[in-house]
Length: 286
Image 1: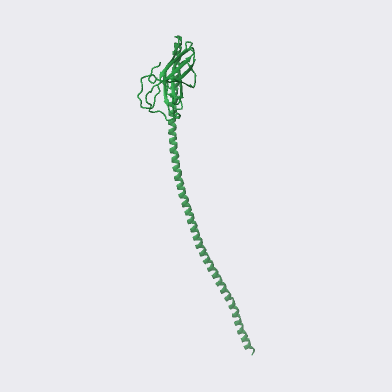
Image 2 (image 1 turned 90 degrees about the vertical axis):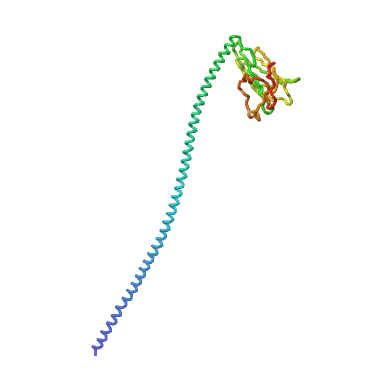
C-alpha cells in the first residue's frame, strides 16, 4: 500500500521540478528580447545620428566652401584693384620723373641764361663807366632829353616816359628834378611826378602816370629839367598819334609803367588814341 503512495509522490516531484525549470527560460527570453530591442534602438540611433551628422557636415562644408570661394573672389578683386592702383602710381611716378627731368633741364638753361645776362650787364656797366669817364674828362655832356613818350591808358590815365642824359664834368652823380606841365590856351596843369627826383650820371629814366583832369584838353606839354647848375626846357605839341589796338581794359592789367628805353622811332610825347583818326605831322620840340 505504501509503495503506490511512494510512486505517486515520486511522480509528482518531477512535475514540480519541471515547473521550476520552466520559469528561468521565460525570464531569459524577455531579457534577450529587451537586449535585441536596445540593440535595434542603438543601431537606429546610430544610423540616424550618422545621417544627421553627415548632412550637417555636408552643409557646413558647403557653407565653408561658399565662404572660401567668396573670399577668393574678393581677394582676386583686391589683387586686381591693387594692380590697377600700382600701375596708376607707376604711371604717375614716370610722369613726375619726366617733369622733374624737364624742370631740371629748364633750370640749368635758366641758370646759364642768368649767368650770361649778368656777364652782359657787367660788360655794359663797364662800357658805360668808361664812356661817362671819358665824357667827364672832355667837359661832360649837357643836360638833354634823349627820348620822350606819352601814351594813353584806360580810365582817362596817361603814362609818361622820358629818357634824360647828362654827364657832369666832375664825373659825379647829380640830383635831377623834373617838372611836367599840361597847357591849353589859358590854363596850366602841373602833373605830380612820383618819384619827384632822380639821380643822373649818364642816363636817367623818368617814368610815371597821371590822370587827365576832367574836361581838360591840353594843347602842349612842357618838360622842365634841373640837375646841378644845368637847366633845360622842352615844349611839345599835344596831337593825335597812331591808333592803339591792344590797349588794356583796366589799369589793373598794366600795374607798372613801361621801363623799356624809348626808341628813336617811338620818341615822341604825342599821346596816341584808340580812335581811327589819322596821325598828325611829327611833333617837334619847341
